[in-house]
Image: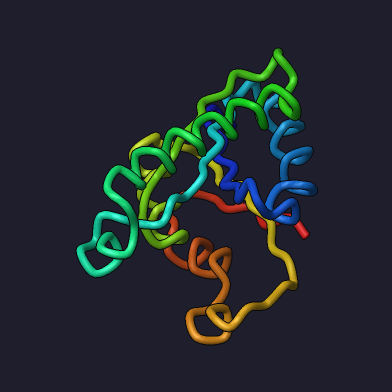
Length: 142
């Protein structure tokens, strides 16, 4: 039924994966699907944003996230699950949807947690946006 499953994670926020990861792994094993771990990097290339960071910051941030993703996968994903590490830039929900299209995933598994921040009141939670805008199935794990 599923061959490619996406799991968006914020490596600094355990709530973004602590419950969703076991669900995604169980689904990968059940369907012999691959797991595509996605981390969203803020878009530092915008001139107004980029001017506040030292030259080369975005490249260093991408390298650090790639290293952190590899460590996360080694520590949390069993070797029998085929895994792809993906880093995307931009607004979290838009970047997740764009990555899902590019990778051609069948299912997005993501966490929904109750830690509301100011942006959640203004924009709505990222999970809600992904559910409304994704063209593939989305499983929200609470």
